[in-house]
Length: 233
Length: 233
Image (cartoon, rainbow over all chains, first blue to last red; front, side, top):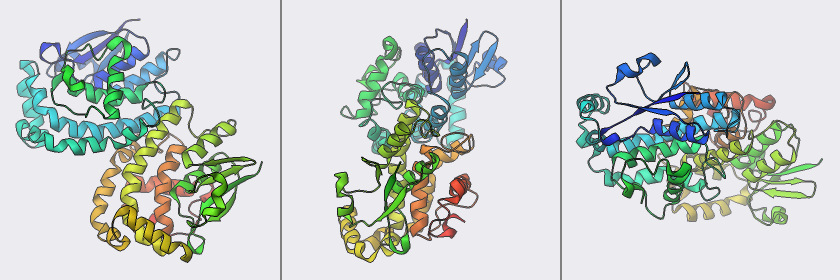
């Protein structure tokens, strides 16, 4: 068994991809160790063997899998005797909904609140690429997109309302214990934490307490990563 | 086996509660027949035995269960050999998130688009109660709340984005076949369909096609209910 994960990296060894974090948490959940291969945005050659250009990419022996959700499905099917990420086909299907909810409701607004912070924490060789591609994609200079983020915080927090209501009923997205649905959402917060000092959550928010529990999982795997401790304080 | 469901009713035998519809779909999913007991908002005495004042209330022999999610859990546990509503503990936990997402993102805006239509389709004895309690709860006359609903449609439809994205990957919320997560969301659309001619979805919206499939389930259980066919046309 030889697992290798191509993992997005910035300056100071910051590992900031929300999608890579999902996979790292999923690997830990399964009790699997993987060699992490630090990969910059512009290291497209490094992952060309995967026949697409985005991390995470997982290699398991000769098997190559890309896309974080597909990697989770692969791990679930290839290691069925390890703790389950989905709890069956129906749980997997519902996790796909959680995935789309997180992308739409969390990733979208969050990206606009930390995009200049991302730029500032990139490996220098990635900066021109990132600035150019994101300016084009989002239609404005990164400084302008991030500006005024404090004013957008209430709406961001309001978007978390369904999850906050859920936490009044159970401690994790997936019930009494975390599973892939939790890692999907947590990846977003860990992304922000690694590259931004911006406070996203109020201290008395149940989502804040959930994030604390997530940071502590697997001997503090996420908490130990280079980042801004205060974002999660 | 003798099942009885206290089911919200309006004028012309309209069964319009989204929560009761979830339960009716769940019963059909389990292949269980229940006697429906039409219950008005002001028929509080009729369900006083349940020690709370909201339908749905399910009686299964001597067992009394209220709250649609709790009823689904009860059915799942009491009839484990019938088709599953949740697919296990993890699927059940994730369905609770779907429940909160639907309440926040769908029920909230939807109520404000059809609240006067609800009033107009109530049993006359319920109208004063409904007008007074909802005016107080929502802080404005019902006519005023509903007014301008066309302008709010784009935002309502945008709120469905995560589900729409999911439908590009699988035909139902719960995967290849519908389960309780689908019934949770469908209840909202059936609520609107039964009491309002207002068009909620565009014909080329994948959510529209999903709703069509849901209407046809169980020999057209939901489609056959008194309502506005054109809302789902």
